[in-house]
Image (cartoon, rainbow, N blue to C red; front, side):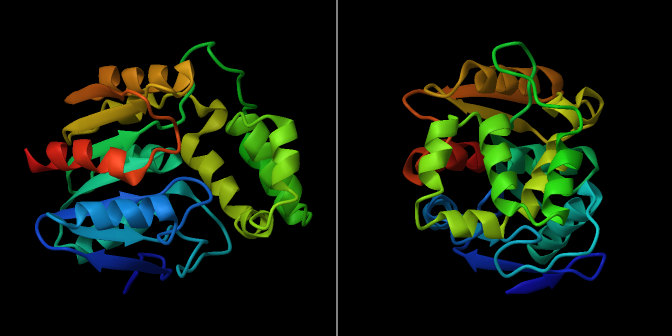
Length: 261
């Protein structure tokens, strides 16, 4: 299914299940067919109507020549409108950062849940360059898509360089390079230095659940705590035994319980 965003960009989505509307917002490298997101949609569709959409620039969605975070907020607004005018929203990783910014912008989000939005709030990890977005955009313009992926994986996702080297020999590396331009979008969504957008978060009116995995880095748990402490009506929960790439069968139950209540 498709909906048209405010700037004319086409946004593709799958609609499954029945019940109250839930919209899923993916993080980096993902589209609606990714096993985690497709699996999460399937699990939640047992009691919710799930809208699993491709963010712009990936999957079957369109894109625009220039990018601003506001356009992605408008994309989410268009999906929520297709869902009936209001919806619960879940965002994972940088998708969580986008969902928080959308809620701060006043989108009709009934409840919000985020898993490990990658904000850096302490010194438990290395900082990210203030101009990281601009650096990635320059590499994209130069056609150095592989370098974009490598820089993002090492500097933003903290994947060891030797592991990224192994990824370059894998069959999925070409697919990662194909969406390299959207990593500029992720850097924009997270903001300069991935700093916690305190002024934005203080505007969020939707009840919010911030989640983090017990096996994830300490900085991700710190980010979740900081989100919960800054958003006016929020709580923080750690899912023991899980990391950043959490399985849908582990994520669906706490989300369903939160959206159900």
